Length: 197
Image (cartoon, rainbow, N blue to C red; front, side, top):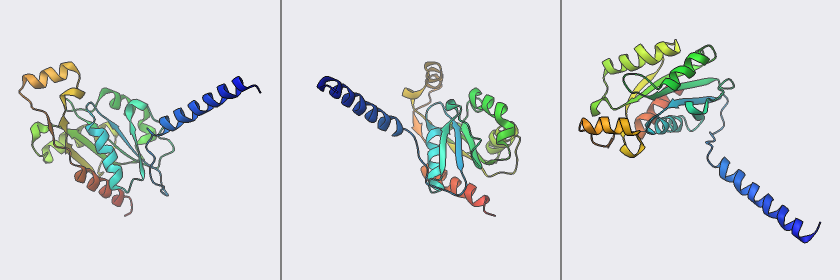
């Protein structure tokens, strides 16, 4: 091998190694567990992404966390927690389509449901939980009597599409952040504990 070829091969190898490290750094690796857990979420502004990661943290990090936009194959998972950000009383169309398409594979593995919504910055009560979980997400998944939680979300104008941002600004809605890591972690613990009974 001549000197030029040697340097080309070395540079390409180093670039490939750097690229593979960079790409794998974006993936979330959970702690090992006897059973495989996953959290599936849909989000508009990142609130449900953070809720999903914090739910997994509450489970000591054993759940892998997936955005529904990834169209993940969840067939290898034993336990699932499903949820997402709410607009107009529903999770995203993409989440609804994913659940409908994969319902038979998912429904016997679902251990918990969650929703993230603004709720006019007011604590969500039983009526809101019933509307968003029992009458929407649970019906969509064809499950019932599971641990569930509605978390308050946040509004970050820089992460919103122009139409939604303009609508909220037109209503005088300020930016806010009411999502609490501790509540998400507590819910993760509750869901995990419910499978050990």
